[in-house]
Image (cartoon, rainbow, N blue to C red; front, side, top):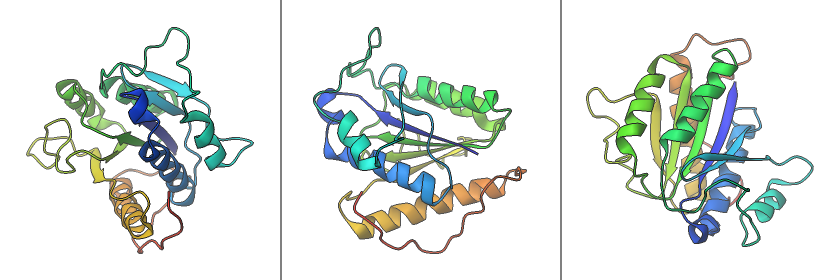
Length: 213
């Protein structure tokens, strides 16, 4: 299984907020504890996805402290923090990763502090991905009932994603509920796939509060 982490960089101040750090730590922890995989690659995105290294010889907290700070510099030749709020390019990158791994089931954990501005393009990419083993989990602090103005349960809408309200990042109870909801959504998606041998089977048992990420 592939597990991908993508964090919105729609604005420098927003990107350096405690919420982005908490979202990244939650997604890393979920990928390892619930999916048994280290999220890789890790992308930051606004107009186009920019890859950064995942934690290696450091704790996730040290990794987060290194990247989500005022000292973070935009990679040369890459436009970030421009408020483009484009989600479709990073979703296409997820599809490319899935294809390159010969259609290994791919879960993308995507943090969105607000709705993207390219809703029609997002819908097109999700529809293109309908026949691929790709599932997107959008952790959002925007309206949890919609993604880019599209109700997720609207007839004819793609079923290969879910939208989850982030809630209070500092609350252990909110974290447990977020973990349980995410696990259930991924588990339901996995059950509909012809699974390879290395795909995990997630339990729907309630998660216990384990931290404050």
